[in-house]
Length: 284
Image (cartoon, rainbow, N blue to C red; front, side, top):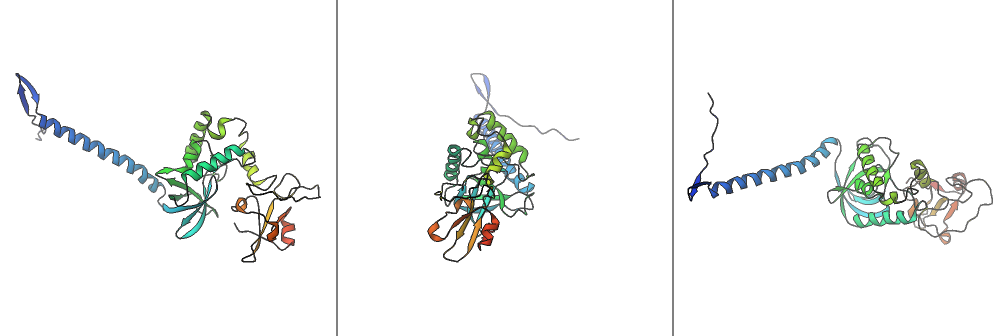
C-alpha cells in the first residue's frame, strides 16, 4: 500500500512559541519564485509557438526596412533583395480623403519602421499566391498590423476576403472606433468602407504630394480611373534604361512616380492612349 509522502517542517522555539525555521521559509520562497518564472516563460513562448504552429507551412522571415511607400506599404531588404510588402488586412483612407490623418498615419509608420529597422514578416497561409506580398509585420515583438488598428490609423480591408486574423482585426477596429481614435475622431472621416477603398484607386488628381502638372483634356468624357476628365495615368520615361512604362493609380509604385515634363514624362487619360503612344503598362 502506497504511503502519502510527508514533509518534515522544522520549528524553532522563541518564548515558548513554535515558529517555522527561517531556512525552510527561504527554501519555500525560492521554490515558488522559480515556479512562477518558469510559468511566465512558458506562457510567453507558447504564444510565439502557437503562431508558428498555426502557420507551420510558412516561415517567419527577418527583413530590414528600407523605404516607407505609404502607411501600410513598405519596401524592405529581404534575402538580399528589395521587396515591396503590404500589411495584410488593412486599408487607409487616402490623402484626398483626410490629409491631416493620412500624414499622421504616415509619420506613425515612419517612426516605428524607420530605415534599417529589423522586422519580422509572416505571410498569411490563405494568401500565399498573391502577386504583392501580403504580410503580418512584427516589430519589437509586436504585430504592427494590430498596432495600426489599435491606434486608429487603419481600418480592416474588404480584401482579401479571408485571412487568418480577420475576426481579431475587426474586434480591434471596433475598440478604436468606440474610443474615437485616429480616423474615428470624426465620424465623418469614415462613412463608407467601400467608398474609402474605391477612392484609393479613383483619384481626381495624381496621388501623393508630387507637384501638379497643368494638363487639360478637352474631352468631356471621364478619364480612366478618374471621376472627371483629369488624366491620372502616369507615364515615366526612364532615361537610363530607355524604358517607357505607365503606372495606374492602383500600382504599388504609383505614389512614388514623379512626373517631369523635361524628362519626357506624361500623364494620359486612358490606357489605350498611352499604349498607342508607345508606352507599356508597368508590372508593379
